[in-house]
Image (cartoon, rainbow, N blue to C red; front, side, top):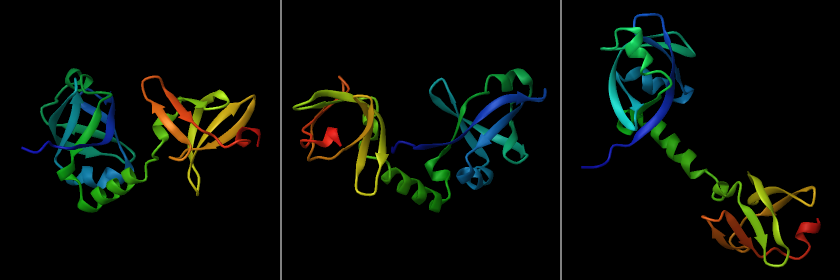
Length: 178
């Protein structure tokens, strides 16, 4: 049996009133998907638990009433939870948009916070941010009190130590002096 893929579409906030309602925030791009589905999944202790939507009202921050959640105490247990739909419950064009977004994720973004170690200069500094520049991804960091950008690419990166959070590089001479 294929694994069910869940897509996070928003989250519950605090309870509303005494009838078991919850405040709900749904990402704009998933609003249509949410409104066409009668069932959502809430993350409860790591498990995706299905709930049927009895009623939704409001715009922006909505008020959600779930079936079988009839009092404030029951709703209280479900506040501040991530809300999911199954991938198969999404409108197909939204799925395509989601796949496009995933492809556009930066290849080296996970290196934020890693130490760049150059073959000649030694420890250069911690990557503060990975920027997407037109030509390539760049590491933004402080070096000797200045902001510097270092290109992140296969030619300059000699190895990455994921556990030690270090990026070993062979930087061109003079790059750090620019």
